[in-house]
Length: 472
Ligand code: PA5
Image (cartoon, rainbow, N blue to C red):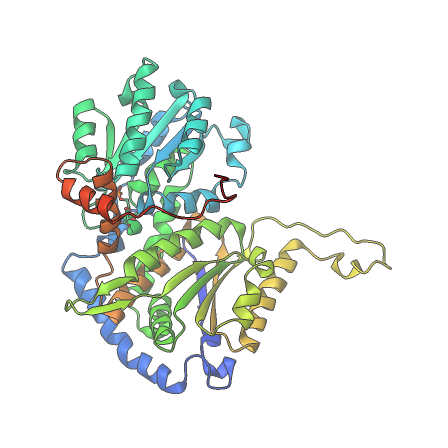
């Protein structure tokens, strides 16, 4: 069991979701707030009931035993310069979010001593041939540890990357067992078979934890520990959140508030949900949120099999950067977005703005800090959105620490569970991803998909516009 981090790391203020702040009958009205009081207990009960049946294993991840992961991380320290992760979707986005939030922003550029001897980290969550080849051409396989992460063990993208990497390792005369770690299902799938056959170190992804809920399993934790992140701190934060919130009523349950209010706003036409952190270190947490919200909630069928085609569209933005890109649309465009502004109280460093000459038009900035400017800009966006009657809430992290980031993950994961109940959909499957996968299998010649390949070939038309137009 991990120790509690000992202090609250996250607060959420929903005032600006309501008409009391927005005025003019905008946002959640009194009757919506009353409705919320009525539906919230049922929604919470449904999630607790599933949990008591043994579902939702991701809610118990803070209790996992980290000794294997920690021992492995210790055993690889100093042996590798680079850790390269092959994985996609839920098998990559959580780790990327952790790396951006918790490692030094220029981790890979630091000399090894300044990284505490930790290896550099590269995550390949795409199969762009230029990018992978460019990286592999410069990589020394003898000094690289590859993590292949796939719950199913069959994902074409990840397993193709694995085949490329494996050939490179073997061509270099190296033992794959010294350079490739598998993270996959404990029993099933091709990757598990390969790991058994070749004696690869393999960490299990606990059954019942789907890809997008797996950041706090070995999927995120094993590579995170290998590059020096505090994985015990992550579990401590997650545990604090789950213990404080899971059984709490609406008034003390930010995930339930978030879900109920975003659900009611969705019904009122706010169909796009923007997560906008005011911290570059949380930029990829917004990317992680985008997958969690989209893949869990975008569904054709409800749980009774009726066609509903529901799901809010998640949008990621970054403060302050997107104030100069998106905020014009957010403040004046269609009234179809609800905003979750995500702030940080303590950025961990302070940068003072030197005073320019007193007659400079920039003199007002002197004596302030970039921290104050960041906070002022965030408040500015909140004020602008609120004055324009755009529903927004504020999630504030005390700091960007392992405990706080884990609480941010749990805030959203639990909110997704509640949203699944509210929308009456299965938040844990992803049937819409299958059609594209089947087509790709067919086009790549996978046995059993010949008919599909034929159907695709017949349906594809030529044409298109070439620019510049070729001269005949
Ligand atoms: O959240 C999910 O379930 C998906 O995004 C998967 O993580 C993604 O498709 C990769 O699957 P796998 O881990 O089986 O390779």
